[in-house]
Length: 115
Image (cartoon, rainbow, N blue to C red; front, side, top):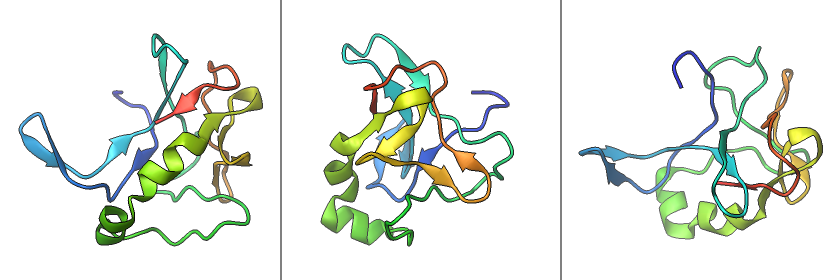
């Protein structure tokens, strides 16, 4: 991961990892067997900290308390997938970083899951 940009899902319920609390997760795509795991990549010119949006869906981030109460990630996760050309999708809507383009997994095949 050195010198690479990635997509991080933030505001998750804290979990101990490596002896410290983690509130986020690096997003990856994998095949059905989980024998291939690939890093999801933002557009190369996207600034660090950019918000991923989905056309037609609200883009206000949930607070940590809202995420904990509503279990938003657990609800959405089964609906994340890789579509054509390695584009990451939620309910067939592309992951987008406004003004910079689509979020992709260049080497993934359509149908890979995202988590």
